Image (cartoon, rainbow, N blue to C red; front, side, top):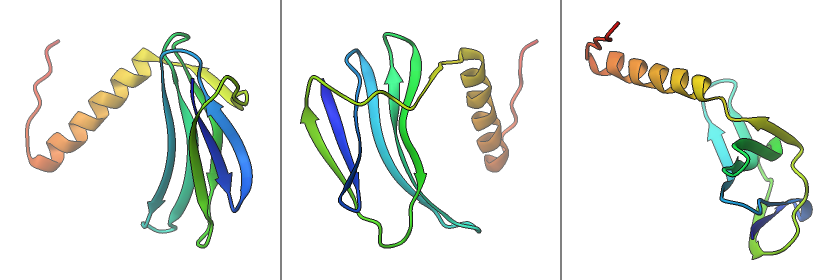
Length: 113
């Protein structure tokens, strides 16, 4: 299985990996809108179990150093959080996304009853 060995300031945070069909992600993001946010997320989707998993979800600071080693291993740390996919929530999220951008673009959406 593919694994991500994730380090923050030279300290190992986790070894993330899913031994099944999956999506595995390590995301560092910065949002400049006030109050501003620097963030690290390490997680994924276990497609076989139809569940989301998470190893890390933490704030970062200017000066932090993130290192991710991509490896092929037989072991990973257990996720700190697991939660099932919710297809109805995903559908509502998609609808909200489309409505938002339709409004921004001046488009009209006609929904069938």
